[in-house]
Length: 157
Ligand code: GTP
Image (cartoon, rainbow, N blue to C red):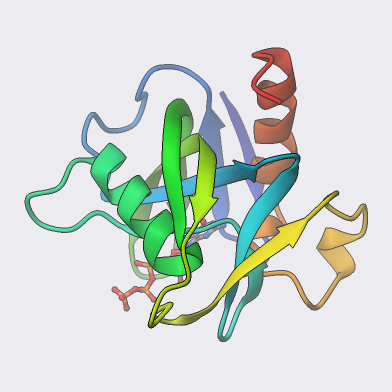
């Protein structure tokens, strides 16, 4: 388990254990791979980020993860793997997110991508994400790098 500050100086605690903070978290974040590329979405305000969002009433986090990927990128999830969880102590509330890895096998054009501008495919994630204004703040703390390390460690990429 490790604790660090995010882009907005909120405290983040990250763990790759089995659901350490909540058995039933209300948020999800999904690191997506399509063919040999990373599949992100372009959020209207925040910029490029891996898709994700809130778990809706009646959903579990895996269902929410697949739904968010489809809504924000048009991606159809073929394989979904739980990677870890993080907790952000925000100014007004504490949020807990499940981190998943998703293998997407097709991307279907959607009539709407909700609050995003749809899919963004990248061969490589740039090294300058922390300084790059095109990228969302949720890509700018150690959750991204540490999760990426886990994907390589687990031979998922
Ligand atoms: P609404 O309830 O729809 O208004 O959502 P919200 O805008 O309050 O956002 P949400 O509940 O998703 O998150 C609340 C706060 O938690 C955000 O303003 C962020 O500061 C923080 N937060 C949410 N997701 C992340 C994340 O993935 N990483 C980091 N570092 N902070 C996050």
